[in-house]
Length: 322
Image 1: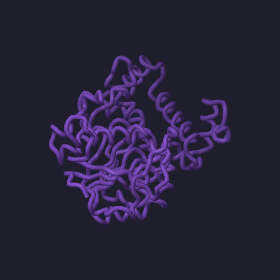
Image 2: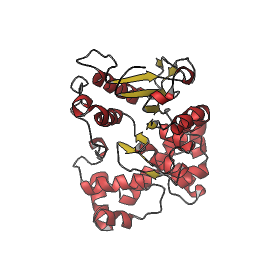
Image 3: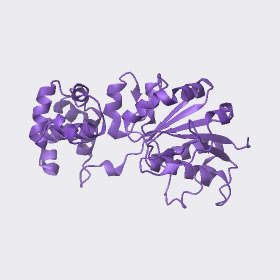
Image 4: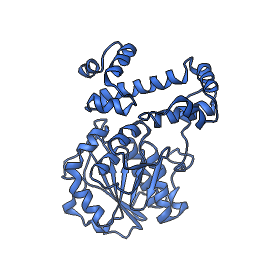
């Protein structure tokens, strides 16, 4: 065992996304040694799997497995980082395969880090009970519907909650790596190599993505309302209540939506819900009853009617085409 200050086990699940995996690993590499020597001095890592077969990423690129649980002493590691599958459903299903390893690591007191959809794996195993969790914005409604008792840390890139850490995925994995390394190595070593990675600086966990600003004029009221629409998609919140959240009247809010999108706030929210349902039909195998609740409709028959009017086919026909 090396004498690194902090030690990581990296566990990519089948069909994992390469971006957060590569970003997290490269940040460790730059912080691990002087200059660009890439020796595992200050921090160390191993890529593990249930067996020695390569794990295939969502882009089709295989990643070699260095060790299996039988080859290592888990007690010698500080963090077990799980990189989730491409879809939430896949990650949930992997709980039965990886449950023994993850529960054993948790029992030993190792901090579990879920990246991307790995939060679904941990939630399925009950390993996020009594912990806050960050979920990728695209999957918040799916997660809250599947695990209504778990508290979601909304609009965060990552969340550090004692022995459970979660990250929304993507390039936020770099920001999380910086935050963790700064705890163990100090800020100087934590940010080492950012210029080489062409990253200006580490982002705070509460950083708001400019790419999610939906209006070209950056209308704060409209952007905030849209964020609430996405977050509250499954609720029966009214447009009036959304307007109150942003300090506007219903008429003022509709006027701003008409200005930017030529739609009322109600029409825009309906479009968000229908687009979400369209995506879920193509990327999950959940039944229509579950998806109806997830997008805030009370009646699946009425939802099918509205969906057909929008897309010229029924939810069942769309799923059949898939």
